[in-house]
View 1 (tube, rainbow, N blue to C red):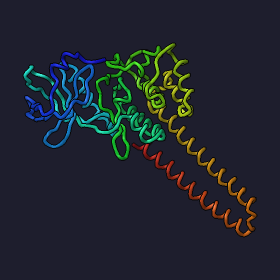
View 2: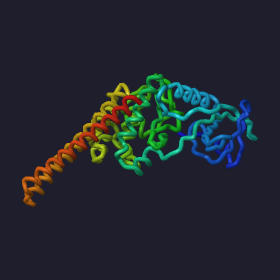
View 3: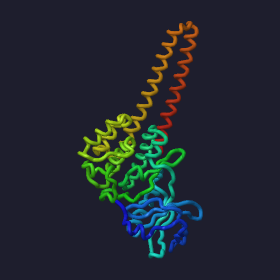
View 4: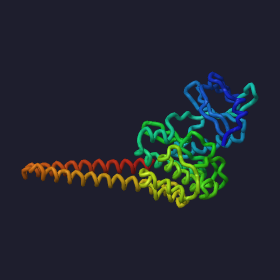
Length: 331
């Protein structure tokens, strides 16, 4: 979905252009274009105090709708999924009056770029954050709709997932306003475009798949069979196969359900990895003792040292587990 290109050309603003609100009199200097879509153009601009993102459109109803979404986001306690709303006004340009709103400028790499730069270990961490925020959004009567990696920015440190486009956010029960085919269950023949939590959770499953397919893949036969065939081709997706399948089949009613399953997988993998390392160390120690003919006294010292290391590792694992629990269940 793209906006009218003639409109974009007509209102294309050069760097240095000053946008001054008719009503609030706030002034913004355009720095560069950040992007454009179905309902407007977003610019990076400079206010008196800081850099901001300024979105303008010839569709006043669209502006009003997105402003209402951002206001609703602000009421969701403990969630920072969307940008903060800073100003709403009209600008009297040489081409006529144009509506705009100003929001927090969220800076950082998009979701896929961050994972590619920092490693797949961040995949479950960021998706746990996202599911936590989606749960709060859904509880407040909204469905994100056009959920895709390009709309998700990772800020930090510490890494925190944030959204930069709320244009597709829809009131629960209505028809989805905007969507991108790859993440849309209707496109794959796996459900309606009714705004409900399971619509967003389908998109989350497809985004998890996208982390292993940076260029995505084309629809052929469609349906669950084709998608899961692609999942099974990627070793990094196999641990999450069950979670992805349930999200695609619409078996999660709430985001927290998907989040709990994903968190259980993360904890299980950490436990299994810790146990495997302990067994490997024991095997290595026993082999070394056999080959080198250690004296009984040295062998006892080595076992005592090994037990001490195991205790330290167990303590570290418990601390990590507790940190995960505190971060994800109390955030």
